[in-house]
Length: 380
Image 1 (cartoon, helix red, strand yellow):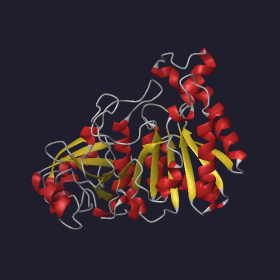
Image 2 (cartoon, helix red, strand yellow; image 1 turned 120 degrees about the vertical axis):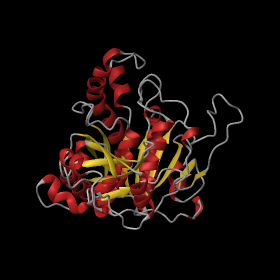
Image 3 (cartoon, rainbow, N blue to C red; image 1 turned 180 degrees about the vertical axis):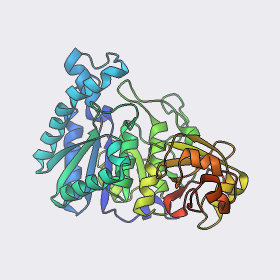
Image 4 (tube, rainbow, N blue to C red; image 1 turned 135 degrees about the horizontal axis):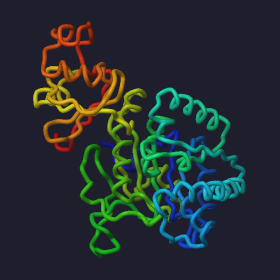
């Protein structure tokens, strides 16, 4: 496995920056950081590297603008309204910084529907490709004012992973915050905490995720690791690093050992990558041990009705469902050939009995391998 400093230079990079890098505790812009990011992005673009920027900060800026107090508690229902006020101001900060170095920026606001709908995702990809070909910097954020619980990303780290995987396939995802990377313990509380410089594909480091973000954040290191796993499972290298380190982007792209580098697994084809980051499954299938072994270890195995023990949810043919083993571990996800009602009728039966059980001819597989992404649990 290649070590951090042996990674070749990426062609396309997605960079996510956290709230506490963009604005200070008073909700005011950190101009030095914004200008430094502009300088570093300009350097990357001049070397032919395409960059997409995902930025947090709208809620804190909006809260300060409305109430004069960036620390004021907000009800969950107030966050979209605060973000609506803060978003144009946030974009103005980035536009000013990028304009200083001659970069034209474009605002792109997303909901999860824009990614999980295959058609909308493809149209969004075309837009991103146009902007990048014009040497325009896409600046992305969640469209909080119209997002609902069912279509929200929940955290910009997850949105960054989904953009890097499904919207505009990248080779590298950089997650910048006020934390230097992943430590063996919270360094603010444990003097002997050690920075983890490299994580292998499928290595489980979730036990090291401690602490959440500030009041403006919906997550912390746990969300960063969840996002990183989604990206690395699809073949995208991820680096989690401190954004205040001088030259951080330049150094990461050059392959220097900065922060925590999470090495990537094999690259997934576009369609399977889209399935892997889809956050809105419509149902759940629980399978027996034989089906589990077949999916995880048999090359090209599909999910047959005989291995299904339980079908939960109200899904239709063509919907995304997750596949769990007896212990509740997700081992796969994919597009089902049958509705929930039909799946319950045929589960546990041999494929030859499908016409008899549902009154029509149908596919032998509940989920065909071409429409499935297998996600082996740690230690498998």
